[in-house]
Image 1 (cartoon, one colour):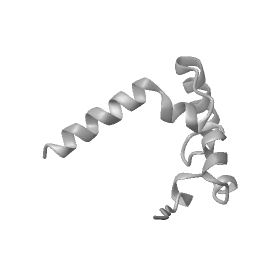
Image 2: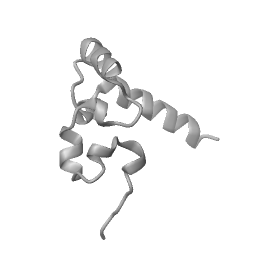
Image 3: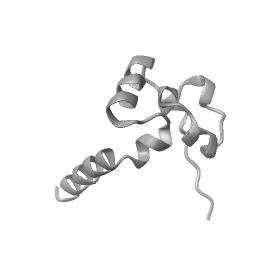
Image 4: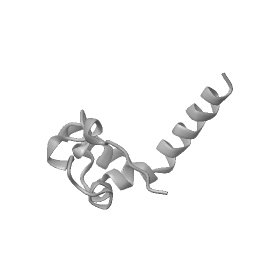
Amino acid sequence: MAVTADLAKLLDRAYEDKSLEEIVKAPVEALSGVSAEDAEMLKKAFHIKTIGDLGRNKFFRAATAMVDLTESQK
């Protein structure tokens, strides 16, 4: 079963037509609303350089899991 998703609203225009593999390797500031300064803070605080690094970060994953569990209990 093929899965499609429109990621354009989540990405800066330069990355809208990239493959998912390219997006995961893209710098964090490729995400819409993430500035170069934000990306630098993520790099300094958590060693996050790419969107993939952000998605794999144990702290962000734990926070997402807690939010999902809380919302599933409503």
